[in-house]
Length: 310
Image: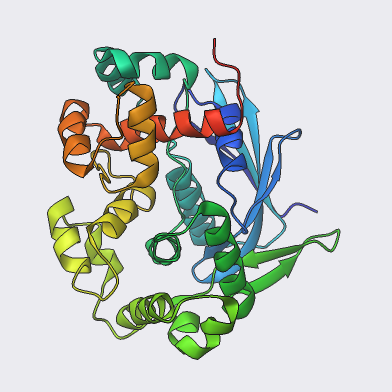
């Protein structure tokens, strides 16, 4: 019996198809994706408690909404927290209209607004896991990063089963990761440094050195200064946190290889741009550099998926 169910409205246009296609090239060990049924299932932490949730895409691009249901019993406060998290993850309230107007003024980007219409940032559910996943992903490919993330979840996270006995992994808490030692992660193919950085980050949160609630009140440069004081966390890492964890609209991770490849392709450049050139090009994208970057990345993903381009 479904114990909690609700409909979550989304601001149009919203392309579930584009999101599902993007997830094909961005594996996430927490997600069970049913493309045909237009459904995602995953475990959310609601006030630290793991809860298995099913999210079904419904409606249309112009009248989109998500049917959320869980068989866990939730208090009214927990229901509100879960809905807030889902709205955040799916960028439910982002208005694409001014962004598209801005992008259409720049010929290389204009065509992307048509090909990828309704694509929105798909964010991490909280800043702890976003930072850990970003550190894991430093200088390795997406597939290996997903494998390492899964191993961390299996080691320190929680496991829930659905009615059919399928297992779902919940991201570990800060406390669970803080209790680890680098020697626990080394057999899982984590480098010594990467293991240290992840555990140091978790311990900084647990001991109060880092307050993630405070981060939401800071501007971009304050966040960068605040978090880059930690070992293993540089500007690129914090920019990814602000983009994929916070949904900040005007970030440009100019050191990102995928962005470099995408600009080379979309702009038809003779050579791949360096970081300085990417920042120069990205000036024209402000104040929506995060979404412009997403659409550039999606162009690369579409090519990898061998999508037909008209």
